[in-house]
Image 1: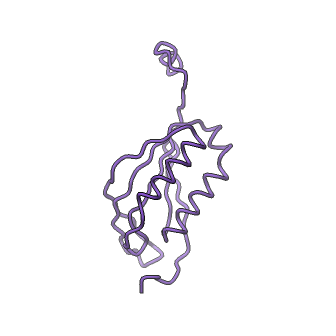
Image 2 (image 1 turned 120 degrees about the vertical axis):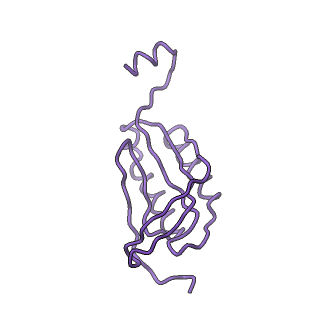
Length: 133
């Protein structure tokens, strides 16, 4: 059905796999990070790797940090959506993983989450000493 609609609309691109990234506003200790810089980096990466992406304004969320005795970390993430194909994700999986690991490490996250279609995936990071004291 989607292919037929694309033809009727005269659409040249039919990307049916949704990739969603969550760009955090705070680290796992609740301290603000440079979210704007990471949103720009995510958009640049997704644009180069997958052809485009859209960042939505801050949401409101919470994450339970099981590595810190189930401490709740309240956050205002930016949600980034990217429509692509499963084939392209498979081709870019190493660069996608590298980006997620870099973001998670540099922003001191307990985990970095993403959604591919309906599946939520999470990369966890080990607990380190609180750099904020």
